Length: 437
Image (cartoon, rainbow, N blue to C red; front, side, top):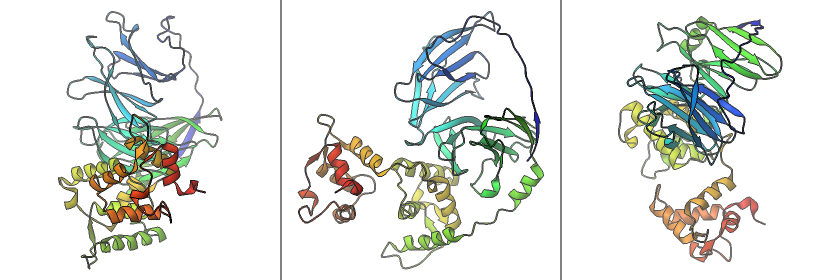
């Protein structure tokens, strides 16, 4: 990318001296609805205030409602418009990983309240930026940039994640969909993003291949904002401390040549993965052959063998995505080769920069299974759950797992000999070997 720089200043007088917002906290996000009838303001006190346009004077906005998020701060906000009904839709994400949609009623018959919410990503991951994107001009997706460098394509109507791609190995706080060529939106749409000091572009929808990205050091002291010009090849970036605004010229021809040449990555790590790909097929004693394809659920064994924690929610999301893409209802019927296995691994699980610590995992298990009355956990009840729910464990597998964690010793050599109930400190002490003395 080439760049030009310019310095532009402009002054505007307010059209009304009456302030719209009366919160005691600073404003962190401000956005109009696509039809400009609504204005949403997010403040540091984790609240959203919705303003509605006056019916007679378009420059006047009235306070329509106030909605508090009592648990965590808001990290992203987006106003969209339903392509079929023209209904205005407001979404936000918070630091706990939840995606929230609000009730927007232009007739003011219903209050401004939370309409629905779902856990989009698991803590400590969260969505840092939201934009709208359509692949086929019929389905609208929320493109969600996650703080671990992933992009999720969320179908706002089915409320399912349909595609996940690992872009870079660190977060980008701002993304923009860039329609580089308005006559060929499907093949020439890009995602523009910024990191702490770089700006970059990514081919949409993307597979995660390194040739689909281009990134340049834009402002060594930090990038504050980036924007694009639709249907043109210009980007603009604003520095954090260098007092500069740069215009960048995107070389689309060079990018398209890179996209045409996407060799399969070959390095030492990939070769080690290939050995693991064959090894997991031999875990079943009845299987004495090595195949070029494995069933989709085996990628869970593949990932866990690399020491990466995967939750049931992440597994289900992967199954939903792959069943949707391949139009197959049963994930066990989906077959993937080595190349697709590694691509799924990189896009969904490889970057564990923001993985939960052992203590966090143990605490989450305790919170899930503790008895609310005395805030203690029953070990025998937990063991029974592990043997009956989810990926069911046998009693021998359970004893083996407890042995690996050094829970058993000369005095305690079985689950029955463990304390019947434990508080949080005792539970962490039992299941976190690094805390033992």
